[in-house]
Structure formats: C-alpha cells, structure tokens
Length: 142
Image (cartoon, rainbow, N blue to C red; front, side):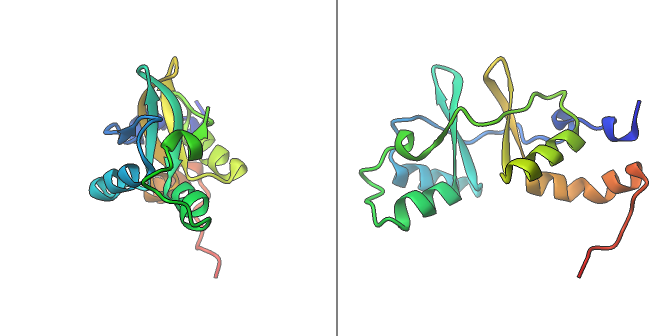
C-alpha cells in the first residue's frame, strides 16, 4: 500500500450534513447555514443528492445580482449533480480533485445517497500528517 492510500475520505469527512430541499428559499438556506456555522448545504430530493449550495453561490447568484433571497429557490442557484466521492476515496485523491476542479466542498455519497462531506478545510487540518506520511514535509511558500 502506498503511503498516500492509507487515509480515506471516510476517515475525515463530516457526517452531520446540513440538508435543504430544492424548494427551500435562499434566505432560509442562508439562515440554516449560518445557524449551523457551515459554508455549504447539500440539496436532497427523495433521499438522494440533487445538488450542493455554498456561501459563494448565495453571494454571486443572489447578492451580487440584487435578487430577493426570499423569492429565489435553492433549485435556481444550486450546483446540480455536483462532483462527488465515495468514502473509500483516498484523502490524497480528494485533495487533488478539489484542487483540479477549483472547488472547496466534496459531497461523499454511496449510490447517490449522501453520507457526509469533505472540505478543503478538513484536508488542511490533516495536511501536516499527510505530508509526513508522504515524506515530503515542507515549509509554506511566502
């Protein structure tokens, strides 16, 4: 086993998901995210992942356009069918996908049923240990 294959997304994902439906208003979604102190919520329809909505979506697709968050529904601004990973995905591969796709949140699913979420921040928290395992510890560039 390669050192980078030792840790999986399932080891570090957040299991307590903040969930909304496509019919949730943007204002209610933002309030739930604020109350739960999270930067994203998964959009669930019929027990399956329909999309993801982030603070960035709320800022760019509503606030920046001057839209009324009480009238805009999550379905109008969510990222539908987001890129996902399964719990067995290595943390290293998750890190590469976040970087390559320029995203910060990866829903973790099995059969399109949401199990958790892994974020860039989650990976940053374990990065020192990951770099030690990979044998490539280095100082941050300034």
